[in-house]
Image (cartoon, rainbow, N blue to C red; front, side, top):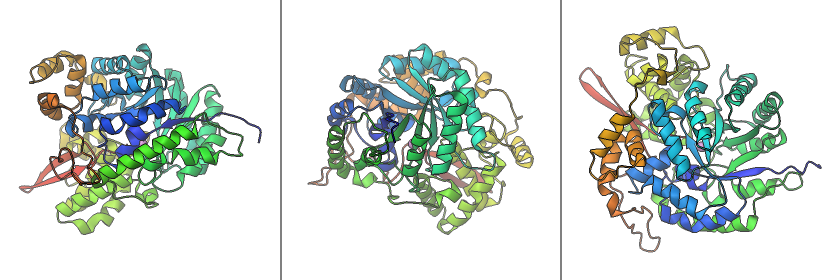
Length: 501
Ligand code: CO
């Protein structure tokens, strides 16, 4: 082959890799030592910020996420920093009014963020418009994202159509985001090819795929052959299982193909060693899923979420009903119009499936599921089951909506600011107000304790002692679990599911 095309790489070690493998517990002091080599390695970007890392910082690590961002920028001035942004939800779990979205994008860019990967769980592009516009205005790179999912309606042409609409919106590049490792090699090829043909070669296409099902290293290669410009990988010592394909393997795989990378294997080797040493300290948080799980092709529930649902069922004394739940999930998903399963839709569909199995189908609806059915999260690509929409309407006592959900929100910045400033330890900056806006329950405790400085949850491998013991038994849990509380015949049921991206 004589293509000689350069394939760019985004390194995931500082965000998605530790989110997927050690429940997002990596403290800043265990990352700083790798930053120089990461910055000099030749990556297109370094992903280092997102909803779960932000949440984990204030919930578990007593670390200011904005300070973490500034530290990264200081230590990695050459390579663009990248974050994952949930469109109108920012890093939280609800829609924010446009002014809050604009301020968040602005402050993130000001503190050092360069590339904003912006997605909406429903692929409702109206939910990412405001952040795309705000990022571009702040001088950032706005990457429009399509969540990959498999269903009878999710054809290549549907994805290509979404790509075209993102291009029309003015995004700087595109990402195909496969959070559950569902993208098979031929699908990856067809979609990238289709997008390149429809949008032109100038629109960069990035591909993000997890490794859980074992097929996606091949999918990355096929995406490259179809014209993809950049792939996401994680340093080998923090790869595979529910994480991603190893950076070094991807580089080696290109040999003899005519494709090359700018990434320097020597620097990458140092980064590998750094994280290999460090990872041992976090063994108590290590994901239970370490191998390959092809069952995901059926359930579409990512590995990390699966183990959490299992433990929740056990807590309800229904540990033997996992199989029924796994069969129920595709049915519920069909009723929603085939929503992709990613935070927060994965939690909403997963929880409803658990309730359907425990209480009878749609005998109990969570408020979130009713909202999803009624359009309050946005529009889905498929047709919803009208009977279930009717049930949702009766349950929630509200009407279905068809507009962009954020259109219904009133200005809220001043109120958020007032509330944040009333908290002990709030420093009065917009950054603190944003922390409060996104994680109101956790922010108060964080502001009050921030002066104590970061906590490191890693254990000394020699003595087995950690600097600070985790407050609760969070082994294996992923940050930011969402608990739904449901009462039926006087009995209270709590169902908790974990965010997964
Ligand atoms: Co991911």
